[in-house]
Amino acid sequence: MLPPRSYDLKSFRNDLKEVLRRAGVEGKPVMLFLEDHQLVQPAFLELVNSLLSGGEVPGLFTPEELAKELAPLDKARDDDPLYSGPSSSYAYFSYRIKRNLHIAVSMDPSNDQFRQRCEANPALFTRCSVQWIEGWTTKGMAQIAGARLEELVASSPELTELGAPKLISHLVHLHVRRGAASGRVGVHVSCEAAQGLKGHGYKWPHVAMAVALTWQ
Image (cartoon, helix red, strand yellow):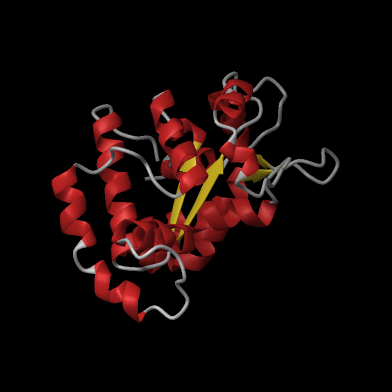
């Protein structure tokens, strides 16, 4: 989804705080997934780069906020048989973040800012496992569109009566196009027109989602 117009750096920092609380204080496994179209300001990726590099974002929490978050970690640190680092609560906080937080950034290499973003944020390569995907499979695109359409059908008694699985199958079929001849996955020609890719052929989940939403 695209961030709302009012979503700014302060909003992103607040969201990062919540992510770090869950991973570092509560000790819960967390996945932070970002697509490059959501990085509406360069500072967003800079914060992610810092987090990847050292498991922390300096200055993210105020001293008062940090003291409150670290308070319950003393006992958790002493009871953790796997931890062998420094005895400070902040060190244990960072350890838990590195252990529990997984970050995935999906980036379009046809984007004009792709190279600049990579050069300015080296942790995307030095601290990540890079997976190059030339195109999304028909099955993958169908699952994305199907999941969204299933929600829409479930919320409509009229559509439910028609038979949700069959209706979803037909709607997805209209959007998942092209054959093996091109070696690429297409999601309706309107997808390419909306992306303005001019033959690059990159297909992304948020575009498939946008096309599925036209049925709403």
